[in-house]
Length: 244
Image (tube, rainbow, N blue to C red; front, top):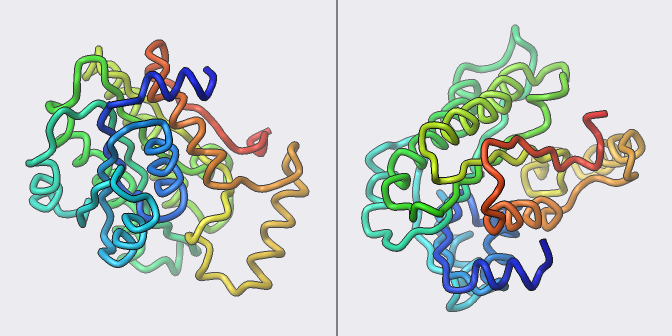
């Protein structure tokens, strides 16, 4: 589907992006605005939302939301009207040995990646147009095993199962899952710069395309799914072939 076709499909539509103040979600919001959509972005950080609004201008509105708090999610979606597409991409990682991983990290991962995405669909679903769509974001660790990422992997593969079940339950609303490989986003900022660069280089060398991803790589696939009315129930890997 060409850029022109996507623009024609999304022009005048309303897209809500949860977890859209940084990284992949930010790129999705920017591409949707460029395609002519009105975009509402939700995130926990008011400061990051303000920066996003300043960057993208009048095409985007923002409100804070904590996806782990059902009352907060309900309040976020309560004033939303004429909703065409929902994109949900928040998610905390929980990395560490099965013997040492703190329970707080375990619950934060599961509550954002599984419970949070579920709650967003619960409170947005009835507002979606019959020809609308939902796109959930997951990570590659659910489909390729990595030591120290058992909980994160379980949550990511769980999003795939959640999306497929919802595609059946909510039809004709389309539901798809995009599985992102390693992408250069602020998610990795907690790792010292030198170690982060070494990690990126190692992953890039082992990936058929020879590089790690950028947020726009993933966002382009999300925009395709918003506009393509013949795709539902799919789990699409955008990882440069790393799963091979």
